[in-house]
Length: 163
Image (cartoon, rainbow, N blue to C red; front, top):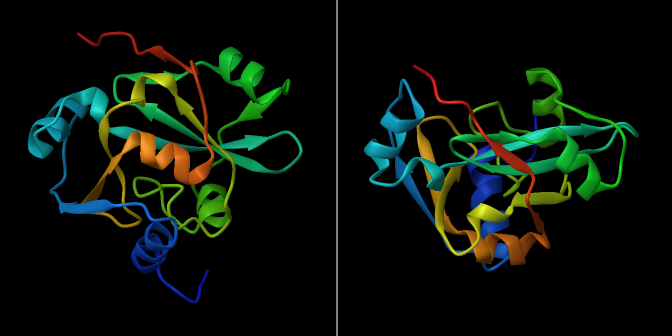
């Protein structure tokens, strides 16, 4: 898929157009959430995954999920007001957003899908996908929510602890 601008350029252009201040930080690969957080100098909950979720009507939405948490499907369906949501495969997510998994973000998505943010990101400076591998974007979560008109709600559950 070819677009007029590649992912990092779309990211920067969209952030600027929305008046959203972002800081791009280069980072290396990480083997775990804890390792990634330590490398960025933040808490695991400050790393936010932008997950692409498919609606039953063929549309999509973004779910912003803090590290250490996962989508609570029943809660998200209730907030969205639908009976069925699912996670698309990597190719479908790329087609829907213009971003590969691991780089996905609503910022600069090729289609401006609705954004649903877990309430636990409110008031925080978060790290999220930057539209390319090897870099994270730091942004004020409240400014991000405002820039995208995101719905903020309890949409996640704590992930079970791994031993």
